[in-house]
Image (tube, rainbow, N blue to C red):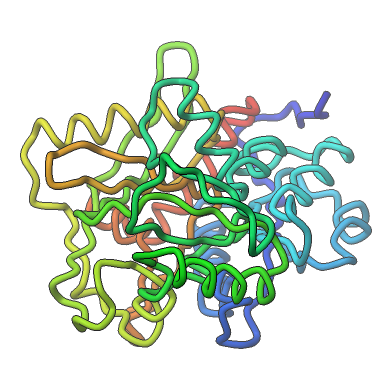
Length: 343
């Protein structure tokens, strides 16, 4: 049981816990750069609270125990392990400290792509047919149809994914599978490739008595604006080398019925997975108009550097909803505060 501070509407000590990005490689792409950390700091101060900082490394538990903030603004992706995004939530719960964002089980499931698919399929949310392969020679499920796409099972931010992850036959599958098993040292998700439009949906808030989370303006990835050699895949190369805000359309220019379907499925998945405060969910739509869930991001990226044109999807959607970065930070913080009875 968390020990919740009793006094409401007071100035809180808010500790941002994140992993600072020091290198621009794919293994730190999920970490927060100094510019983002500074923006979150300003947003917390804009909301009227004191800002503290804790690096999300091996010293995080002791530093959290020593500072004992009123609430943690959790941005930590973790530094190792299949459940690394659950480490800070676990520390907070052990110490009785409220925190922003989804809890231990949700963050663990969210980083496990196959398990997320299993859970959502149970609740009737459609995902592409798939299999998890742990060895190079493991037989392929005969029900799967090429083309297939291979993804590391326990990574985010399109880590390990590019156009060559889409394979069209057994030989190319085995070659790519062997390469990925060696590079990422984890099981590989193999799923049918949905060659269609891609949408991402940002959610803010919580389900509670008389309330439900809001869905922000939907964003579409415009693959026609990427180089043709990248194909219809939003992979690492697309997100880094060829990334540009011009490649994304927000609000997406879609019919109202499609928008409503995306909103309804997103809120259902958000509730099923027990997401808290904020999250981002990704979908593909095939040529028949069927929607397929791709993945959930319970710790969505929130970079927003206009000068460098480095804009994460979540703040892009927030801006389209009429919020600036400070207001977005404030509303995410206040969603958690309300949930804990601090507001």
